[in-house]
Image (cartoon, rainbow, N blue to C red):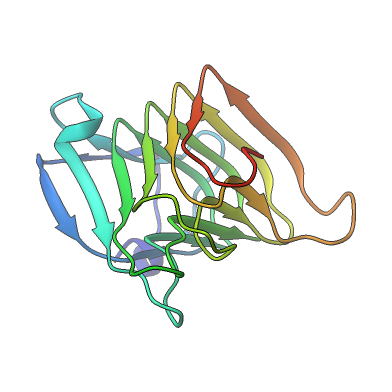
Length: 171
């Protein structure tokens, strides 16, 4: 597997068209670096053609979790939380660095009146997160930080993105 074998150069996973009922948990990958990135990309080039969705719950409140992960790129994909009512986070991160979302659609099922339902939740030590030409749709927050102390997270770059249908705050 990727987590066990590592990488020796940049890797691109061309994800075939389809809806994948999966919960993806990515951690550290030996050999990854600024040059040796790991990219997941829609093979068709259209973000609506590749959907990663999961019915999130209280005990598993994410579709994509990046923990101690770095140098990942997600291009032209949709991430959808089909969770019931209160637990519907889509992307969660802690101790993550240099993560890119390019032309991604990150979507919570409906506008949920609960703080446990956000498009993206940033935990501690999250650095250099890039969102470019993305759509973050619904949820309580579009992007939420769970960090109480200032300075633990640095470098959130949001460029040409649409944050829509959130209940409380965009960021």
